[in-house]
Length: 426
Image (cartoon, rainbow, N blue to C red):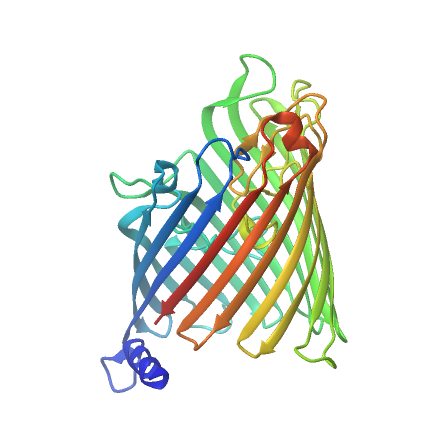
């Protein structure tokens, strides 16, 4: 039965050729994803009923047309639905009924002496470990950009991408469009000349031309012109794996100076001589906050357009902004396609002079003078199973134990999160 199922999906995704040489091809792809989520006490208040079982459906249908080896176009539509009791779980973060998700043209230089390609149109942008720029695929709606990107690959071990983009704004009543006042430029270079290691260097410029952005001084309004520069180093040797990523931000926000930074480091070890190849790992993540929000210097790190879900706890109570995070975990693989993982997080604010921000960078709790900086602890349990290359499952549970800051700033009950997902891809 499984082989028959795979055979049907393989045929559906087989390119259709329109000439004998196969230079002109039409190819279809698709995804159907269903996820059940149960959210308990996400407002840290067991006295008020806000728990919800959320059924999320996401359907994607795509079509690619290759007209010659150096030119192709791609289009993808998406329908995202949420079936929940609470209106908060039917917002634009969960629902986007049939809209154009991607539409781009891709050009490749026909000459090897000109190692350039370009990708123009609505597309995903995803770099490194997605700590600053990612597609946020966990989201029912996810993230895309209207962008023009140029890729330079003079040799196999070096690539440089440069782009101009505007993140797409989800609009349920009309077609989605780019946020025209929020311009995002990037330069991302990847160096892979060292065996089993990679070194990335990046520069991002975010220019928000909205003149109503509030500054730190009363009545001060203006634009955002923010630069982010940094490096990512990642590699493995013997059974060790390790990584470092850092970024500093500078520029101006409504005439205030920007002085912010973020830091990540990780280390892991795989015991390949033991049953199921267990891997233990440790991480430390730190994003700056603003200890004095009235001194004319903006110090809260802008996490930009990340995929925070995969890094700072699956319950999504943290971003790389006014946050310190210690993480330890272990993962095992009882089968090549099955993985179990257990992660434990300790969360602290960088400063209680700034709010507590969740994964989407909106405020969970406002700043509270004199409050503790201890946010809490989170336990994440996850199992993933890739039954075939077309069919996958995952199931997980997360528990957040509220810490002293939660108690000092309001109600302080613990939160629970259960989810189960299946995905079919062509």
